[in-house]
Structure formats: structure tokens, C-alpha cells
Length: 461
Image 1: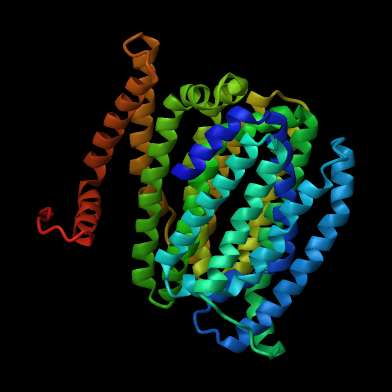
Image 2: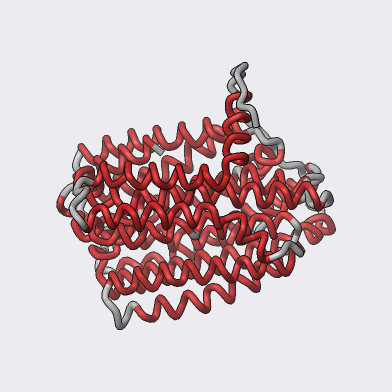
């Protein structure tokens, strides 16, 4: 995260916001095209721990073939994109980004096998290496004067380093076999994950295109810069859920009592972290954006207070989604995704009629509604009561509101006028209130962390 943040700061100071907007819009399209080739097999392999090499080989041939098809389709769509935004000289730049589709899918089995085996150390080494390597390449190109090329190449280098490390240090080669029967069984679960993911990425691509057209690439870049903290946190949260919680809960799907305990513990812990980070960013985000990125991002500084509130809801929704997915309710998740996108589309349509701040406020309201819908959904399919869901997040929400309201009062009456002091006030009130409600749970976590680092002194609980 530190590496990404530092390179992002330097690039933001040397690259025009319009370039960031163009890359963000096109990257969303690439992500949607890449989803065409995954077919949900990666998640299906992790959910079914007992897949053999025959199945893995079959999956590999299908996914790689579809990745090539997606690359070709994207190449045809790129012409429309560059004409739509009036950038006829950027064909090569966008083609560089599109190559990520094939590179990522060439190691889909390697990655899934590491997740199943909880080879988290290597996964984190890969992530760190690709972040550092791509940052170095990107910064070198920026200082050489190749602004747009730097952004595109940085994305490509991330995928290339990931591909290289998995291929060399976690080698796996497909067998010369194609088992249609095993593939079909796996596809029955994966197809709904694929459709849900495809729907999500296609929606993101449409959203990026509409917002870019409605508010201009410059304004869309400002919105994205205001979202940067949310993106970093959500990406790491998604990695945590799908690489740790998902395989772990999938292994407990037949042990309902233990599954329930770990499911609610993960929800509780995620709510602690998301409410805390969202609250701190509410008070420090605006000043940090201007301090770190410069005055050219003044719109992002104004909007970050609104955007960071969504940081509270999204990780909690992710945690609940993974819980249902671990139990095998893939088809049901797809139906829920359709409902969510229909509701979200009403917010997107509003961008034609409202200002950017109003649109962002509507997005926060949607995040709250989506959380309530997800709780009802999980309660029905997991057969865990609605009250238990609310109880798992209520302490974090109460602590967040206590810290938020008190700090705003301090600021309003002139008792605090510096963003660092505001952050400290919020943090103190949040931690004290949370500790009051969740003393036992927090001390258990601290005790486990200390034991992990082989400390002999323990808390008495």
C-alpha cells in the first residue's frame, strides 16, 4: 500500500488529471473484457478444494482460449473508444493495457492453487514485487516525459511480473487432456460467479463511460482521485476475503456451528476497521489530498469527505457476500447482483440531472441500502438471524457515530481547527467507545497477535 501511495503521489504531481481519467475509463473496459475469459472458474476451483490436475488442465485451456477472444474483441472496441474521446494516436497505449487479459489468465491455475494451499507468504511477495517493479518503471517513464505511456506501462508491468513469478516459482503445466464431464460440474457453480462478476465489471465500464462523458475525463479523474483511499482499502479487503476468509469458510461449510462463529467474527472485525478508516479519512482526507497531490486536485479534496463514507459499507458487504458464496449459493448471489445493479442504475441515471456532490451523496445512500439488503439476503439463505447480523456491526457503527458527531461539534465551536487534531479526537472516542462494547473480543484479538509473535506475556480475559 505504501509503494502504491508513494508512486501515486509522484505521478499525480506530474501527470494531467485528464490522462488519469482516460486510463481509468479504459481500464474499467479492460476489466470487463477480462471477465469474459474467466468464466468463474478461478473461484469455483477454490470453493471445491478437491479438484485434480485433469480438471485444472481443462479449465486452463478454456480460460486461456477465451482470454485471447476477449483480447480480440477489446481490440475492435478500442477503435470506438479512441474516436469517442478524440484520442486517435493512443491505439498502442491502450493495446498495452489490453495484453493484461492474457497474462493474468495464463496463471489462473497457479494463483488458485496457492490460495487453496494458503500459500499467503508467496502471494504477498508477488504483490509487493509487482507493486514495486511497476512503480519504478512508471516513475522512470514519467520523468522521461511519457505521461500516458507511464500509466499504461505500469499496469502492464504489474501483470507481467505476476505472471513471471507464478510461472517460475510456483510452476504448473497443464496435461494434454480435456475432461468435459469434470469441467461441466465445475462450471455449474462457476457460471453464476462469472455472470455476477461480468455484470459488475460491465456496469463499472458503463459507469466510467457515462460519468466520463457527462462530467468530462478531467472531472472523472478528480472523482477517481478522491476514491483512491477507498480503492486501496477495498482491493486489500477483497484480497483478504478471497485469499483467506473464502477458502477458510469453504472448508467449514459442513460444520455449521463453527462456520457461524467465524462468519460473524469476520464481519465484526471488518466493521471495526472500515468504520475507523472511514472516520479518519473524513477528517484528514481533504487536507491530505491537497498536501500530497497538489492544488490541481482541489475538486477531489472537496469530494473525499462524501466518498469516504462509502468505505464503511463496502467491506461489510464483501464479508457477507463471501459468507454466502462459501456455502455454495452462487446462483442466488447472481440474482442479488442483478437486483443491486438495477438499483444502482437509478443512481447512475441521476448523474444526467444532478451535480457531482449530489451524485456522490446518492451513492452513499445506496451503499447504506445495499448493506441492509445484503443482511436480509444472508439471513434468509444462511439461516442466521437478522439480529445477529446487526449485533455484529452495531458496536462499530455506534463508535463511528460517537466519534464523528463529537469531533464535528469540536470543529463547529472552534475547539479544534487542524485535521491532525480532528483525527486524534475521532480516534480516541472511537477506540474508547469500541473498547467499552467489545472489550473481550478486542483482547482476544490482541492476545492472538501477541502469541503469533511469540510474546510470553498474555492478557487475562
